[in-house]
Image (cartoon, rainbow, N blue to C red; front, side, top):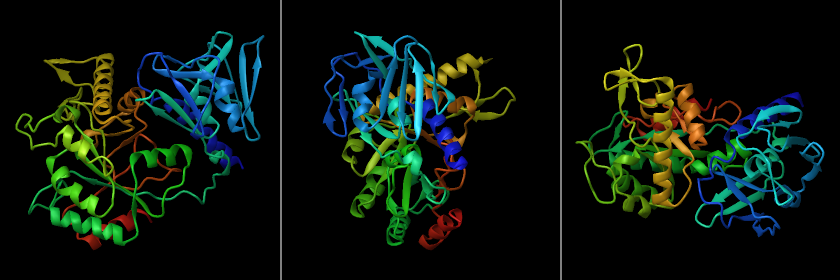
Length: 408
């Protein structure tokens, strides 16, 4: 029981640090609340404050079996289920979850005599899934039957995440894979009984303990090369498999265009055509290069302070630069594709605690390294997820063996 409680508290801390990151900055108008697919009528309009959605607390979660109490004297909201209690005061930036103090990014407020609370924190802490429909300004809450309280240590599964980059005829190495070899890889994965999932599936599993299909696997590509569209997409579509491409957003254009002598990337129109098979996520806006760090070594631009124009930037300048890049990438992809960006891959796999801090602040829910290994909801950190390099020199049999070895 102690293990379950400690796991829940750790999970709750992660959730609190992540809550509301999927909500974009939008105007305070016409936000609609849905509970298990049913529209919820509220006598006070939900609001958006500093990019966070706040809703009347009773309307939001009482329908999902959570008891809500209000202490008018102390201006404190308390929510309870048989396994969980929370409390937080209007105006304070922290809450208690099962008597453990946790930080929150947005405070509860009172509007027209009603207490409005940050919806992602209060819902997800009670084991419910929250989704934001940016196009229609809809907040959707789904009952996940308090998965946190039924979690068992025997449940977690290892999830391999394969990393590809570019498909080039006649080239097979850690970065390049011949198109025919790639097809052999995909056919072998499918025949071995693996089922491809998306970043959304992985986030829901890691955060909400939502079940995954048998033998899940995530196929990823970095950078956004044209071969992802011309070669990988047809194979994946034919085999009814899915993948994610993490793009350098500044390198993706409306019309075919070569950026600074680099290998060609696909267009936004290509990305839209691949929708349903290939998901587009982030690989920075324009930070896929290296700079000189304080110790004179070359580091990825999102991983360290670097010399810019002959002067070493301050920590504040470094954080502002990385944060702005992450936000710009996320917002551009979301504008072009019309769906949420939750995943980020670090260029060169180079990152630091500051990188993670800025990724969280910018609204990413998971981030991937190039460290070899699998993802497991008990042992994996959401901003340091492992990936397995799908080396082009691997035969299909060798690739399956590498995956199996990592899962042992």
